[in-house]
Length: 89
Image 1 (tube, rainbow, N blue to C red):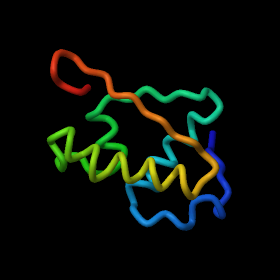
Image 2 (tube, one colour):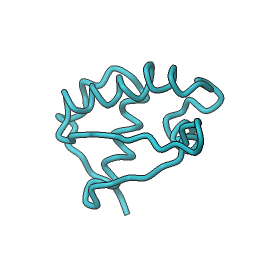
Image 3 (tube, rainbow, N blue to C red):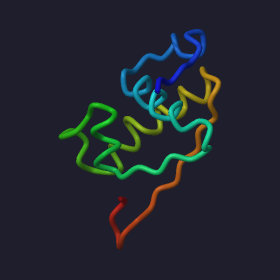
């Protein structure tokens, strides 16, 4: 099974993490939802071991990637954070 997307939708991405997030989201496009844990998300975006703090990870990686995907591609992305206690999971 392969995921297909139009190169015209993604060639303007500036960050590698945006490209990787788009690839993962495109796999789940038909379901309309992708649930992933924070550690797995860091691994899939290639930043495992970096950004241990959720606030910095969200600000520097996730928010920028989602903004870029929404502006430059065919996908519209929204995300929710889930917490266990005080920690984002």
